[in-house]
Amino acid sequence: MHGNLTHHLEIKGACAAYGKVPVLKGVDLTLGKGEVVALIGPSGSGKSTVLRMLMGLTPPSAGEIRLDGESVDYRKSSNVRRVRDRIAVVFQQYNLFQNMNVLRNVTIAPLKIKKRPNAEVVADAERVLAKVGLADKLKAYPDELSGGQQQRVAIARALCLNPEILLLDEVTSALDPELVNEVLDSIRTLAAEGMTMLIVSHEMAFVREVATRVIFMDDGLVVEAGAPKDIFDNPKTKRAKEFVGKILRH
Ligand SMILES: Nc1ncnc2c1ncn2[C@@H]1O[C@H](COP(=O)(O)OP(=O)(O)O)[C@@H](O)[C@H]1O
Ligand SMILES: [Mg+2]
Image (cartoon, rainbow, N blue to C red; front, side, top):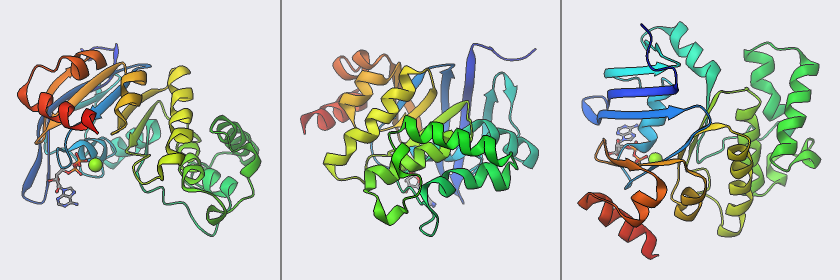
């Protein structure tokens, strides 16, 4: 028997550690097709580690992760490859190749790693760059772009891998305030198109607007999960109350 197929992604009792230091202590989380789940919580609560664990960068030490009902064995490189074929991640630091133009940055992985045909990859790249509002920047180099534009290139680069699930880790946190909204707009577009996403964000108004569900983490555990209005307007646990109170006050 396979797991519940309505869940695209299912994390059950997942633990992860950096060396001997336990960081995730039994995380449960589900992500349905087309859902936008927001992961919130204090700094150090383990949000980034959840995303790193899913990508096999910090593999789980216990628990289970299922993709479309199929258990992933992170000790097997074939399983890790399969996960990375289906899930893409964008981090706060966009890490574009400075010596390559926008088109090259977006196409290099599908061409070199996935060995897909050039014409097809370039067509995909043009499509995803248009989606993030950068159709006129194909030939630009990263240092000719604003931080918001560079982060949108990073999102396009992830989309060009044709992921089924997109993970976004505080992708607006390093940006000047006036550049945040253009990046959020790109994510809004993806959400409206039904992209399945797991988003770590401190932009609470944005989370409230786009998230189908909000998951509050603290100290390596999911403390509370629910609809955005439940978590923001009526948090049940003391820790969620404190966090939401602090973050909504400024
Ligand atoms: N590379 C690392 N080595 C050791 N400890 C780490 C490393 N990365 C993160 N941690 C620790 O793991 C905990 C969770 O970190 P993280 O997942 O980055 O939290 P968040 O994204 O919620 O701020 C923190 O206590 C952090 O100090
Ligand atoms: Mg983090």
